Image 1 (spheres, rainbow, N blue to C red):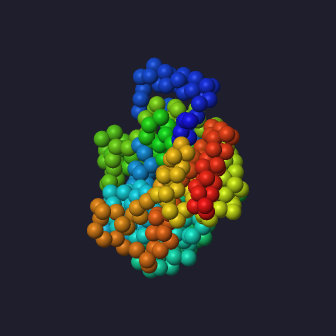
Image 2: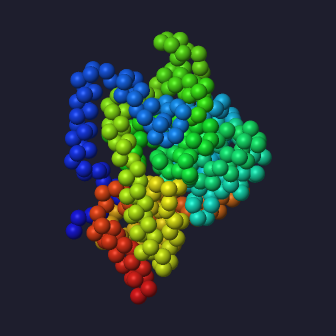
Image 3: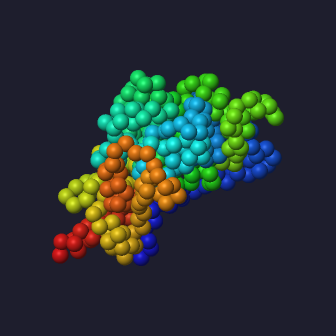
Length: 369
C-alpha cells in the first residue's frame, strides 16, 4: 500500500502544461531578474490580497527581515512574537541584531494571545510580528488596535495564510505590512524559493523596494542602510502568476478536507483545530495528542505520513543561551510537545482522506483495547 504523503504537488495536467509554457517563455526572453513577470505578479498579487502595494523578495524570511527594517527596527531593539512557529520570525529578528520577546499563544488557535499584549508592550517592543499559524487568522484586529495605541507597528507573518480573510480584509492587510513565503509547499507555492511584502503605505513599499536591492535609490546609489540582495526571479514570478487563479479553489479544497477530519474526530481524545471558515486556509491540519511519538509510529505503520509543526519552541533552541519571554509560555511549551500535522492538501483523494481517518481511529481503538 502506497504511503499517503504529508504534501503532494498538484497533478493537474493543464496546470503543468501552463507552467512548462511560461518557463520556456522566460528562458526565451533572456530576462531573468526584475522584469515584466515580476512587476506583473506584484500587481496581480496585490490586487488578489486587497493590498495597495506588493514588493517581491527572495523568500519569506527575507520578507520578514526587510519589513522589520523598513519599520525602523534596528540592532538592540525588541520585537514581540510567538515561539511556536518554527523560528522563521526569530531568524529575521536575530538577523537584524534585534532581540525577540516571546509571548504565549491561545489554547485553541495556537496564535498569539492578545491577552498577553499588556505584558509585551510594557517591555517597549519596536514592532510585533503576528504569525497566522497553520493558515488561521490570529485575533489580528484586536492586536493591531492595542498595539496602535502604543504606536507599535504590527507585521503579519502570512507564510501559511495566503487568502485567509475576515469579511473583505485579507491576511497581510490588517497591520503595517504582510509578509508571504512562496516555498513550494505553501498554499501558493513557486518551484523554488520566493517571498513578498504587501502594504497599504506607499513610503513603506518604496523602502522595502530599496532594501531588497542593496538599499539603492537608483543603480549604485545606496540611500538606505541595511539593504541586501533579495529578489524574486522572473521564473518564479511567472509560475506564481499561473498558479494564483487556482488559490481560491485550492484553499476551499483544504478547508473541505480539514472539516471532514474535524467531523470524524469529534469524539476522540485529542485536540482538533477550531471550525474552518474563510478565516482559515488550512495550510496545515494540526492536532494535539498526548503520546505524539506513539501516535506517529502507529500512523506510519498504516502508511500515513505526519510531521510535528513545531517540536522545539524558539526560546528553547540550543543556538541561543537566553531569551526574553512574557511569563512562562505554558501553552506554547505544551503545544510543542503534543502538536502533530496530518495530510491536508489539494488533490488528496477522498479514499486517501478515508485512510487517514481510519488510521487515526485505529490508534485510539488500540489505546482503548
